[in-house]
Image 1 (cartoon, rainbow, N blue to C red):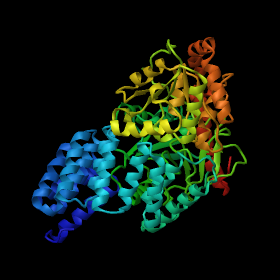
Image 2 (image 1 turned 90 degrees about the vertical axis):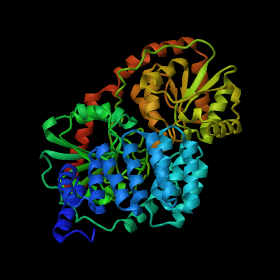
Image 3 (image 1 turned 90 degrees about the horizontal axis):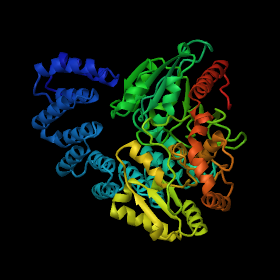
Image 4 (image 1 turned 180 degrees about the vertical axis):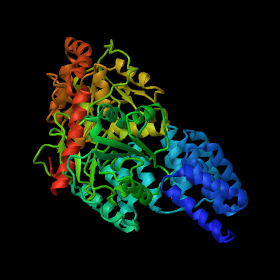
Length: 595
C-alpha cells in the first residue's frame, strides 16, 4: 500500500480492499469514494476504486479512475490499460477492448495479461487466426510463458488444430509443473482425441493439474463442517461462468424453473463472468441469491462460498473457459458435485461425484469420479422459443455438422467421407465461425482433403447473429452427422428439434456417448446409436435413401421430443434435486456413494 497515506487512511484502504475481496463491491466503492476525496493523488486508492467500480459493471467510473491512475503513476499505465481492456471486454465492447490491449502492449510488450486479453477479444470477434498471431507475438516476447502457452493451446483447439495444441500443451506442462493453466487446457484438449476413459494421457493430465494446484494455492481453508441433518433445507451453490446465452443455459434453466420441492432448497448462483444478457435475467429469476464473483481471486471466491454456508456446491464448467476449479479444490462446501458443462472426469479429490446417466456412464465402467446417474437422461433441453418450424429441403441430399472444428477428428472425417462416397451427389454442409476466415478455413479444408472429402462437395456457413437464424440453417439439411470421439450436445438437440435426424457413433466414454443418451431418451425407432464406424455409414446412407422416412421424421421429431424425457422439465428437475438430497444424506451418513 502507499507509503504516503497516513496510518488511519491505510487502515481504511485495507478494509475497503477486504470488502472487495469478500464480494461487497458497493460497500468497497462507497468507502473508497470517501477516501479518494481525501487523497485524490494516491495511486493505490485510485486503483482500488477503479477495481471496485469495474466489479460493479460501472464502466464509465472505472475508465475515469484508470485514466487518472495512469496520469498519477506512469509506471502503472500498461496495467491500467489492461484493466480498461478487461472492462470493455466484459461489457461486450470487443473492438474497443482490443485497442486497449494493443495500447498496453505498446507500452509494455512483456505484459502477458495484455497479449492474452487481446487474443480473447479477437477470438470473441470471430478472428481466431488473429488471436493465434497475437499469442505468437506474446510468446516471442515471453518465451514459454505458461499462461500464454495455455491460451495458445486454446486458440489452436478453436482453429481445429488439436494435435498441434496437444504437443504445445504437453511441453508447457512438463516445463511448468507448478502452473495450473497449461495442465487445465491439456485436460480440456484431450477430450477431442481420447476414446477410452482410462487413457493414460487423461490420467496424467488430471494428476498434473491437481499437483499444480497444490503448488499454486497457498491460502487453504479449514476443513468444512461435517454434514449433520439429512432432511433440513439445503443451501445449494451453483458455480459457473455461463449464466448467459450459452449451451449450458439451455439445460440449466429447466432445473431452476421446476425446483421441487421449492422450500427444500435455497439456491445461490456464483457467476464468474461479468457478461450478462436476457438469458441471465431469466436464470436469476427463480434463484434465492446471486453473487457477481468474476472479480474475485480463487481464494476469495472459496472464502465467499464458505461464508455463505453452502451445503452443496455444483460446479458447471469443468476445464472449460472461465472455470474456477481452483476455488472448488479448496473445498468450500461439505458436498461438491460436477455437472453439465464438462464431458469428463476431473479426478479432483474435492469433487465428490459427477452427475451423468447410465447411457453416458454405464455402471461398472471404470473412471476417475464417482457417478450419480440421472436416468433416463442426465439432461433436459429448453428449445429456444424463436425456433422456426421444421422444413424438409429439396434437391440433393445434404449431410451436415454444426459442431465446432475441434470435434472434426480424423475418425469423424473418415466416417463423413465414407458417407459421402455411399451417396453419390450428396453434399456436406459445415457451419463454423472460422468459415469466414480464409487462413483458418484453408487449414480445415486441408484436413478434409486428407480424409478423402472432395472440397467441391463441401459448403460452408459462418456465424449467424441470432439463434433463430442459426436454427433456420437446419432447413437446408437432410441428415446431421455427429462428431467422434467428442459428441455434440446442444447441436444434437437443436437438429432434432428442427426435425433433422442425427447419426451418431457411440464410444466408450462420456464425451462419446452423449449422443447415444439423447437418442435413447428420444426412443425413435431407427435412430439408435451406431456401434461402429461401418454402422454409422450404413445408418446415414439408409436415412438418405428413404425420402418418405425423412419426410416423416421432419414432421414428427419435434412432437416426439416434446413427449420424451428430453423435454420433461418437471420430471428431470425432480430427479436432479432428489439426487442432490440423496448425496447430502449420504454425506450425513458418512458414505457419499456412487449412485
